[in-house]
Image: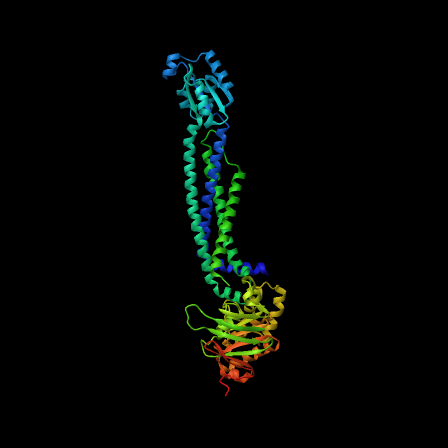
Length: 303
Length: 229
């Protein structure tokens, strides 16, 4: 009885101000999907970050015959004994947790593989253009970089030292900026959604003032008077969430996954990531609509 | 059943009290007329009994409960023991007779089986047999008021408050309304009726409490509307 009665009242309420309900659903859907997109972005950036953190963080390029930097022209290409000395010194540093020597031919092979889609570019680079290098993995990039750099800098045979993370930082900044913009827009829209929920519920309360006044008169409990409105708000929120869930799936499969194919490395988001975001969006949507209608009603339906 | 002890009610921004030091008792099963000109405090009295308003001063007990001590969330339980009828009926236009009466039980969570049993009984009690599927706008004023009375009584309240129930109804139909109120009173329900209708008061010969400018100026058992000389 109770459930049937409540849902009947809810149905009447939603149907009576249909235009407001539709507006509410649309705004909730858009704000939730934007928020979800922001969250997916966060995850994507995190994924990319961990991918790179697990990889080379410091490259020490050695002089070759074709090097043009003043340091290399002074000392000539790195000799095997110089290379061996550098390797030994790097190994003895406690900050270094991984050390790999990449010869010219290895580096050239990797280059050809990574740019295999762009043969014209590959053909402009010859094996001698790519220097030998040490790929150094550090415990903590930011803190350890100067220490390690000091050890090998200006030695004969060392051309330049490159901190990979400084290159990536620019990329991260771009991603972070995009993510922040999405989140800010989402928050503004969520505020709009809150106001719309409040308005819709107020309208609904006004439409049903006769019913509610009789309910109070015959002694319906406050909860019972408020429940239809509360359910109304939550149902609108759920509909909005359903649309948002669809949009989020589209954002992932059509947006982020498509972008993925332009990157040579695999940082694709898993289905679990997507589900996590969708569930979070549902919780936010339902709480937002429920709490707003509850608080709005407390002002309009006093005993 | 209703006990007022030195009750004063001031509305904000008004110099005169709506009720001033009113003390009175209404016993269980009594039928009481509340008479007096407009603005004499009849409606304020009814609103105080329902705890729609709080007294400025004094104590009110209804059905053994001290209203000052009744918390807000218990007010609905008080109102379940009080039925209300108004001059303007206050029916839901989108619901038929049966649904209007059933609504009062649905919203307090009564089981459907119970509702199916008692609603037809009370429709018979107020004399609306065969009209359970009519909409309010298909009924006369007197019939609409019967529906309102059925709704007020369907939960078997201890007290029935009627605020000028015959105010919108012609005298001949009013007699029928009064018969229903009398029938409800005979089941043991206390009835308090605020009214302007002298003919009705005189014909019923029940207790009459007269208010003037917020004060009780007369309290007479088996009274009449006008002054007793």
